[in-house]
Amino acid sequence: MTMPARVHLIAAARPNFMKVAPLWHALAAAPDFTPVLVHTGQHYDANMSDAIFADLRLPAPDHHLGVGSGTHAEQTGRVMIAYEAVAMADRPDWLIVVGDVNSTAACALVGTKLGIPTVHLEAGLRSRDRAMPEELNRLMTDVLADVLWTPSPDADANLAAEGIPPARVTRVGNIMMDAFELTRPAIMAADYPAALGFTPGGYGVVTLHRPSNVDDPAQLARLVAALEQAQARLPLVFPVHPRTAARLATAGLDTRLAAAGVRLVAPAPYVRFMSLVTQAAAVITDSGGIQEETTYLGIPCLTLRENTERPITISEGTSRLVQVGDLVATLVSALAEPRSQRRRPDRWDGRTAARCLADLRARTAGAASAAA
Ligand code: UD1
Image 1 (cartoon, protein in one colour):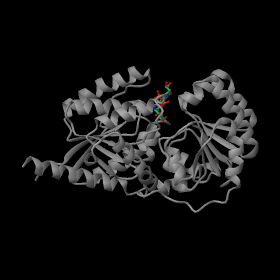
Image 2: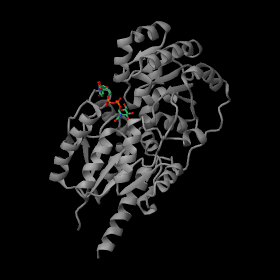
Image 3: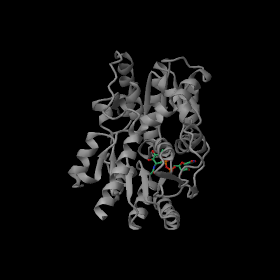
């Protein structure tokens, strides 16, 4: 009998964990694979990491690299050095990196240089905004990885336009929906909104963490003023990312939001956060993943960005791009719109992890017959 193939799964930051979890569970249940979970330590706060692992029923990582925060080069460099040692000692049959954080690009570079077959899950997304660190991470990871797993046809088209051979690409769908379906009972049971004193449909959820929104004091002040006005229309709850918490506190804007009635709470782990989203009247965010989750759930999403690498959440989903000056008017019109019949993009169905495994098996068999 052949040995199960060892698969390194890289988890680094909050948005990675919900992409890694469905794959980990699928690989762990398969006799022909052994998942090896590597946490780079890019996110390390309990609410940003450990509590989300618990929500997603992920075990403690097999390897924890403990890289922590730093400048982009410091963080990327520390991940590369630490992951190279693990990869050289462990020599996995496959490496899977997910999303677009610094650890994603760092591990893809390490893995491909060591000749480890490397897969990128959530490949092909493009905002065409090179001021976004994630866009540079996406470009680098897709050019390096041997196999590109895409969520949507726009991603396939982006890769084709960049000259990537179609044989490297498989459209597996959106793994975030697998994470939601995996934890749906816990999400439905959590009822975090009630614990905060909100009724279903009686509030909005805010998240902000992009450097373009929170690192520029003038932009942050404009956003806070717009949220104060929005709060007068719809009570808001705002789980605050650590980066944003630091910027708000420095500018004294956290007390202003609280005085206006906005509920500032700690970053919510996955189940609590999704419990907030599922009952919300609307979501205001600059996150990538939340544009997808609201599309899946049919909840209006006001995306505070100039562009999105996820255009399908606009063309087929519930998201719209808004500028800070239009936030209140857009919120009012979004709340007045009749809830349209929700449309779910093709292959956003909770079965993406199964497609990933089928693709790994097909590619393993293809490589074996090519070698024979
Ligand atoms: C990272 C990702 C971003 C993702 C986001 C989700 C990159 C380039 N960015 O941005 O794509 O959308 O995660 O959260 O990889 N901090 C803590 N505790 C933590 C983590 C961070 O206090 O557990 C603080 C640190 O002071 C750090 C700051 O937050 O300086 C920003 O963290 P960092 O990991 O650099 O980037 P994010 O903004 O979280």
